[in-house]
Length: 419
Image (cartoon, rainbow, N blue to C red; front, top):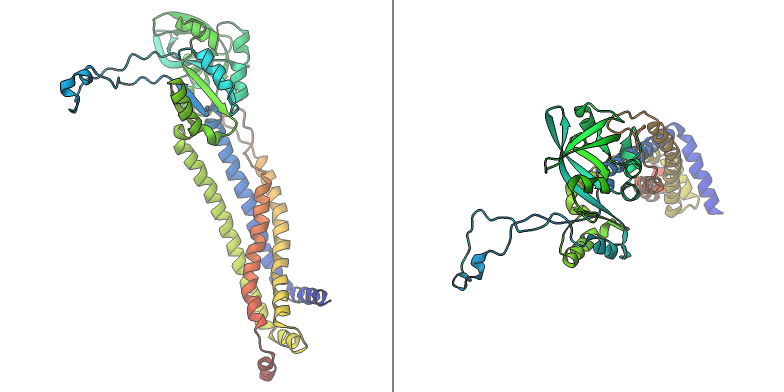
């Protein structure tokens, strides 16, 4: 019964100063709206940037590293086994570029339950002929279907289809900036000179656009069979094995395990892209900080309004306590006022935040280097909405707690005597 009465009194106090109450609610609404829109946009942008780099990067890359031989003949001389060896012009160890017994390695990796899939690749330098000029670049021989399944390869191919690499013999996909340098279009013949000085004609069937122009200026793709033919290598020749895991966080440990098991160099995605992941984390952190700061500022507004309400309603508070209301009841009344502002402003803020996100999501995003992206990216993760409303309630509760405690300690005798 008293709870119902406390609620009616709280509503009366809210309506008595409805303009100030509305201003406080608008402050909360604005804060939640900007929190949702800003966080959704920034995390959506992070997802886009991650897609440009991380989605095209294997979780683990297996390859043969060309490095110096750690064992030199002087180490076999007993007279120098305890001495320091200073050797100049140390040559690289006799390491083959291709991965030996690659089919057995791939079979073993595929059987690992932690692995989502593998994609072999043949990475080879080449020269692209433009008249008498040769432009240096690289050709990656891939399996288009597997590459698309694991790394969304088709999304980065424009003006053609990536699946045609396996259908059309002796075909190639060039990075668009590289194709512009060569002055070629889809259907034209591209002449490639290998490191063995042999020239191969290949049909251009599409353009590759990763969004990183410097990469696209040297990058080309063919089927792995075509790459093996250009390089003069057998059908089992591959230089890289790309591994995609179910859980990206397992990559460092699995990479160490594979390096020890297969005797190959293994680099995980966290090590290869540590700087990039740091940038994404910082951008997300900044978004959270800005949004939380907005909510805290709105909380100070609520605090000031409730403080003023207490000073103006000292008579009412004294009468309530004189007629039998306890300090706890008065405290609950003012907390109800604060939470009512938070719930109302927070709910409207969630709606406006979602609507603002929809507006951002329709703004054209026209960049030639990213043909697959047509509008600005927005992340509609429900967790952000939950965080927004919870933080709104916590902020308004804390803003109302101190004024409520002050109101509960008002001595009605002193107030009435002063009157």
